[in-house]
Image 1 (cartoon, rainbow, N blue to C red):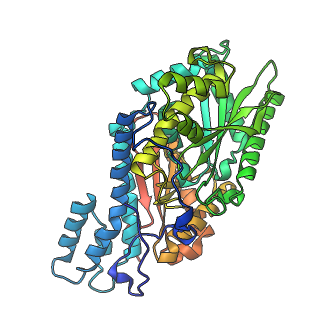
Image 2 (image 1 turned 135 degrees about the vertical axis):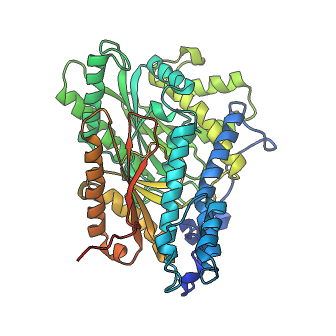
Image 3 (image 1 turned 90 degrees about the vertical axis):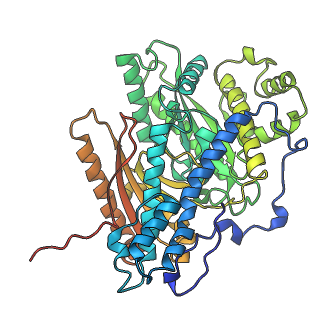
Length: 509
């Protein structure tokens, strides 16, 4: 369900409606045209229709749990002065959302208008808690560690000559589904770190590379250090085919060429850092990929003749989809192979070309997914995220426009990413008198003594920094936080430590 604009009533006690989508301010309906050439609505013969159906059911159910908050709170707002208000409000919330509302907020309704901002943020946090619990307990995307899908992909990755896949998409919520949906890769088989503009931290990435290689030497995981495989680093930038001047990457001013160029610069700097710091053939493989956030089609950058990634030499999965929609499986396979290599058969492909082939085939399913369930192009082509995720973790978030990521250890170093998120939500929420919900997360290893306590301290530290940096919003009740931690060594869901909405304890005098 797409959320609509707020009625800008001064009497906020009537309850909120949902945030206005940013695309409605810019898009001329005439330019939003279908770009697929499809046969009477039939799917491409490479499309996994069963998987598409499962993924859509999960997307629909999860987003509905957040989008129903508005109508539920409106219903509750209308009865706040009725008899048995507390009991009836809780019943409505349970029936519609499956959560309990905070009694300490509801019970004040008889002396002052309900704090709808606080209730809105509370509901977002509780729905995230339920969503996280379902993800880790039930594995709805069928990509958890040890699953058949994850084991098969890890074997495939080794066959391609890679022992680890590290992807950096942009923090933009329109790329949050890059791994599980767009690329159709089991989430547990990928190391994902999101950054604004896909501009990842080179030093941190080198440190992760070191840990990976150390584990190969010490434990032989995922393979021994003497095996001829490499670490594959991918940057995924994004662009908009429907409204390229407004709905591209905000970190690059919607300049697609700049987004690609800066992503490539980061990749090359990472490789150079590894090669300069570690001799004896130490190196990594790199890939640069563009994602059209309107159709989920990919633009894959190929290598130039000198072996380096080319900004100009690209192939479009949407072009491949359109040119092969009427061709046989064999003809389609041959066409893809010839686009990415000198071979005409999939079995002849090796290395990164073999990986690219699979990526293209997987993405064809996603193009049909958007075609079938979103009429060829998403309606929310702009930002429509439900909350901001700050810190380290969020393994459970794999849905488009659900979360804006700000991957950081400290607010000071992650300020550029976080500021972009606050700016986005100032348009989505604050402009409509709704608060910005911020979920702070720090994953930790339960095998390390004191790690849990340190994760809690990290949450508190970031929470305090946020309250200082955005004091004006916090003081107005326009920014609320929920502090969570998770043991990455277990399959348990995230644990809520505290919220800014918790009942304040009265001090004794």
